Image 1 (tube, protein in one colour):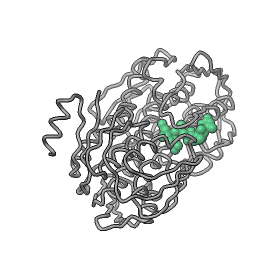
Image 2 (cartoon, protein in one colour):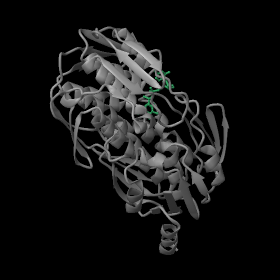
Image 3 (tube, helix red, strand yellow):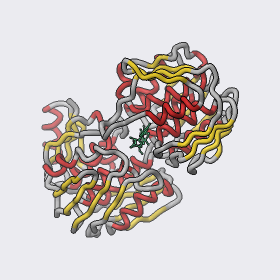
Image 4 (cartoon, protein in one colour):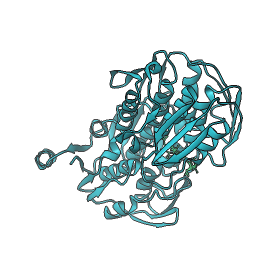
Length: 431
Ligand code: UD1
């Protein structure tokens, strides 16, 4: 069983390059299959969720040419099946994007109900509300969601809750509907804009992505294009918080600083120094005494829920009492028990974590309960005294590319081990 083993206590120093945004790339891959011409996508991250999505496209007949780890050429002309129901696809949440993409293009789709991280109830009612408003009939039975329509017609859709997935999914289907669709109370996340930009470069006519109201003027078909995925703001934020927790000095390269504003603002409140460049952010915490603060997760441009566990790890080391309020998912503090085993002092009441800062963490054997919480436990391990072993790292590998190598480049003592022999080797190496 693969594990991460970390000897903590070293300040991270140096430069790290951030890859493409997983959550943008997942939707972009689905969107690419909506054209019968070649769509070349660059800057895809080489992570498990992406590989599962590409396999799913292959399964339904699309041509998927993985040019290299970060570049793929997709052509949807050869798609022959509209049923996406194979073992792995159930494990990724973003499988639902195939519903919007196939419904838009072929007016029918059947996709296994999505899985993903267990961070709370993950309904898809808003996705289905949108598809139905466009004229589709939708049915959920035997673990499958099916949607079909004679014709999709543009319409007015108000999303009762801000949902990234529903906004993108409706946008995908509406791109090839007849007439104009208006999505109100749309999500404004950078990846919503990225998917709209890709679709527009394929000939779609989408306006207003990045605001509350998106207008989609349906087109008949989409053509080929070449597109590069935006940098991953969550991967970037993870390294920024790791720099803070370890009192390091790290230049996080290949980012869009605007997408990191909420993260940057919170790090400033904890006392870190931040220097912003055009496409990089430097976090300096070498002499910082971390200060407590409060944070609430909200839809973009609010503080991202996917950065919540990493932020908690930093606040766990701040001198005083902080609070972290989870505003998106109801079950996102499962990692707190693991962190408390490393010496943190955190109490969870409903959707609020009340954190009393401690002087230091101590290494322990912990398990990653989900993707971002797993990343947070790595940060805790890097900051902790002694050795930390993290189990269930397959969650982390769903969304972070070679995270152990990237942390090693910053001076961390961290290894991916698969046997007792590997483990002993690491222990000998780091003493
Ligand atoms: C995406 C991200 C995920 C991130 C989340 C919020 C992907 C693959 N995943 O998930 O990492 O944590 O955005 O930034 O991009 N909701 C409904 N009905 C729906 C859909 C959502 O009530 O039909 C609710 C959810 O329960 C949640 C909130 O809306 O409380 C936000 O969910 P949403 O933005 O849809 O998250 P995802 O797109 O699934």
